[in-house]
Image 1 (cartoon, rainbow, N blue to C red):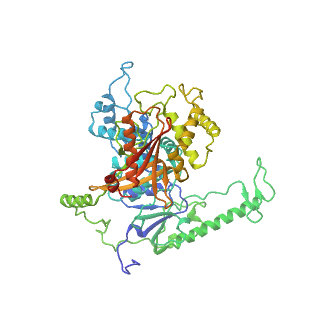
Image 2: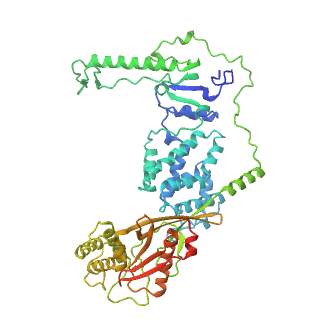
Image 3: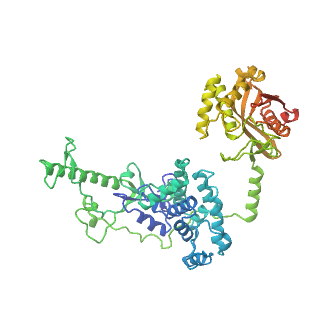
Length: 580
C-alpha cells in the first residue's frame, strides 16, 4: 500500500529493509544484491575501503603523489577504471627501452615513462592525462587535483556504465572520498595518499557515502540503527550469528565496582556480577528483537533455515515458533512479474544535444582574473593574468639600470626588507626612529639568512636600509600624506570587455585616503639603486594602471635609495573605462 497515493502498487526496492543484529560482514549482502542489480543503501556497513571505486581512487592518488609508484600505476591500469589486461601490460613493459647498463632487465613502468615508447592507444591516453595532472600536483590542493582527475578520467560515467544505471552508492562514495581531501590542503597530496593507503591496508572501518536515492534502494541497517524507522517489508538477517559472550572483566552496573580475575583467581562476588551482566545483555538483545519485529508495516519475513540453531545464536534468544508460522506464498503472483526498469527512456538526440549545448554556451559568462604586473622588467606587460607565483630567492628581480652605483648593492632581499620596514612603520608595528629601524633591519636580514655588513656595496647593511626608510618617510610629499596612508591596500575592480568579464585584483604599496574615505593618492615604493629612464616609464605605466583601476587621479613613485619622488597622473580615458 502506497501511503502517499493511498493505493496498491508493486513492491519496490525502497519498500524492503534487511535488519542485522550487528554490522559484521554485511558487505556480503551488499555484493549479492548488487550482483542481481538490486540497489542497496546501507548505514550499517562500514566497508568504505572495501569498495572497488575507493580502491581505484586510492591507486590514482598514489600515482599522482609519487610518479615512481609502479605498484599503484599497475593497479590503476589493471583495475576496472582503465581495464587493461595483464598481457597488455606485459606487452607495454616489454616495448619500453632497456637500460644500457642492464639490457637484460625489464624496465619499470611508472609515470615518468616516455609516451613515444607506449604503443597501446588507451594506455598512452591515460598516461598522458596522468602526467598532465601530476605536473599540477605541487601548484594546487589535493581536493582540486583529485576533482580534476575524476573528471578527466571519466570516473563517474564509467561507474554509471559499470553499475548499469544504479551507481548512486558508488558515486556517493566517490564524493565522500574527494571530500576527505579538504583536511589535507596544507599537508598535501602525499600525506593524503599515505593516510588512505594505511586505512586500506589496515582494513579500517569507515562509513560509506549516503546516496541521494536511498528511497529507491533496499535498506541494509543494524537493528539498533533502525529504531524509530518503518518499512512495508522487513527481513531480519544474520540471525544465526553467535552472541558474543561477556568480557572476562565486568563492571557491576549497580555499584560501579570493577571485577577482573587475576592469574585465574576470581574475586569475591565475581560470578554473581558476571551472571547478572550476561542476563542484562540477553535482555537488551531481546529488546532489539522487539525492535526488529515491529519495524514492518505490512509484512515481516523471518528466515527459516534448515540447520538447527545453537543456543548461543540470536535466533535462539526468543521463541518465535517458526515451525508454526506459514511459509511465504508467492504462487498467486503472475510469473512474468520481475524487476522493472523505472528509469525513463532516453529521448536525447544529437540535434537536441547540440541545441542545448549552444544554449548553455550562449548563457555562459567568461571571467578572466587580471593583476597589475609587479614585474620590474622593462619588457613585461603592465597587465597580466593572475597566476600563483613561485619565489626563488636566488633570482635578482631588480632591473639593471645604465650603471649600478658602486656605493649600494641592490638585490631582491634588500627590496623585501625595505618594503617590510615601510609597511611596519605605517601600521605602527615599528617606530620610525633611526636606531629602532636599524635594529629591526638587522633582525629581518638575519631572518633571510643573510649576513649583516657595514659596507652597503658588499651586501645588506642595516644602517643603509634604515636610512633609506627614514629618508623616504621624511620626504615632503610623503610626510604630508603620512597620517592618511594605509599600507598594502587590496584593490578589486571589474570591467566588461566584449562578452568577457575582466576582474582585476592587486595590492598597492600604500594608499592615501581623503576624509570621505575615498582613495586620493597611490604610492609605489621602489628600491632600485640606479634605474634607467625606460625603467621609470615602465613603473609609471604600472602605477597608472592602479590609478585607473581605483579611479584615482594622482600617484607617486618613490625611489627610496635616491630619495626621488616621481609623480604619475591617470589618463582620463583609462579612468572612464573602468568600473569601480
